[in-house]
Image (cartoon, rainbow, N blue to C red; front, side, top):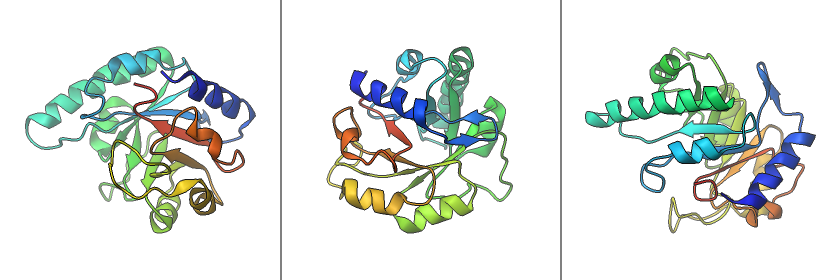
Length: 202
């Protein structure tokens, strides 16, 4: 786990006013990834108690993948409760409701028309249109990506810190994609409220 990224998150959380109805949102978020972090349980157990969030992706919504994702979700929900971490589920309001978790939107789009909102709502965004849609959809925090080149999407064009900061103006924005303790220092402190990572927290 990247110690410099943890230190950045502690400092950001201490000075931030980013809040939602249930309290203050953490500055540090682990994104699960079936390819890069097949079993995220250990990484979740190492996150700082009471000071981080977890975005359950691990996609595979059809067939046996759905059962495996639900089982992983139950384990992560138990870990998050024990460690006072926030859990959100990507693209599945039903599983989120079953786990007592929040929801992670993709590109600011709710996965169904019911908008079952019980906890924190986060969203991904890959440009200005996604970002605006996510804010209109009621996201408490939007992760704008990829800010730097990332192993998750090799070859994808990165926004870079200046374009990321320009797009992120006007609301709670997090940085995702190639974020480490070294790269996060290239982002303006006034604009970056949170970071999401896989490798740096795995």
